[in-house]
Amino acid sequence: MRLGGFILVEATLGAALLAGIGFVGVAGVTRVRQAWRHGGAAAASLAAEPPGALRSRGELSSLPDLRVALESAGTFLGMSDELLLERVRTQPIVRFKLNRGGSSLSFRVDFADGSRAAWKPTQTNLQTVPRKEIAAYRLNRLLGLNAVPPAAPRAVTRDELFEHLHPDSEASAPRIRAEAVFDDQGRTVGAASYWIPVIRDSGFDVAPGRQDAEAWLTQGETIPMEQREMAAQISDLTVFDFLTANPDRYSGGNIKMSVGGEQLFFMDNTMSFFLELDGKDRNRLELYRTQRFSRSLYEALDRIDVPTLERLMRGGRDKDAAGEEILTEAEIRAVVSRRETVRRYVADLIDQYGAKAVLVFP
Image 1 (cartoon, rainbow, N blue to C red):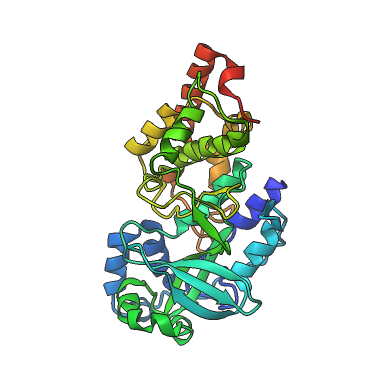
Image 2: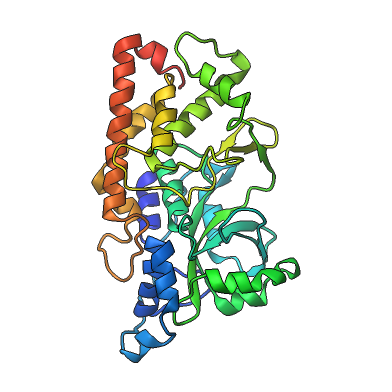
């Protein structure tokens, strides 16, 4: 994985890299950026500001054109990240279909080339902050994982959204207008993720799947040979969710897998990256239930530090109007603090049981 090139490419992308949309004025970017950054209450207050208010103060200007050569960051389901990211950023949109279920605005987007993406706009929902899906994807790659679908910022205009709204979603237009946050130029920045064609529930968030997984990851218990790979993925998911402070994984139906049952997908990460330095209670409980880990993931924790995350998550090398914050400084420092918690916990287990018994997965 050519991580250096990936960090440079991904870190310079944001609201200014509006694939197929054009440029956004600085004030327009700022307006959506604040909602994008904070979500919820901030989004609601920004949405209430009269359109054109920033323009009247003479604060609009053009952002520079950002074009960066992509390098592959790896593969997802056998396809290069470069290919999938390019599609979700630049493919012409044919249709938006509102996804059913859940409290947030989420769409399936059909592209002109036949591919699809899941897209969440900046919105008033307190629990959905789209930039955090992008942060989860980037952190997953930093750790050498390939479980989060490739995700990138994608801006959409109000006109584009409603002109291409699927007939089945037209009845939801009032809700979309009320909850999606647009800037004074009629644009909203969202997170676009590769659409996995077929997924199914894993069953590991409910009994008896939960009991099986807990036993596989407990010292002294036997892991069936045919379940070793799945046990390793569940262990990785537990660490990943602790690092991202995602308490929503076990709320029901949020542990998805491939239709053949061989791979877990770490999806739906917009309710994550909270500021608790020692993790969310639910994530901490899951971590401390786990006593078997991947050696490669444990070693990859060393990659998580403030300078690396700042390059990966906070826009360009210089923080200015051309760069989009994917994680704030406080969120970055919270991730680093939680990394220390994981390292100390696993080190204590190694002292107690030995490295061979604790780091049982590659």
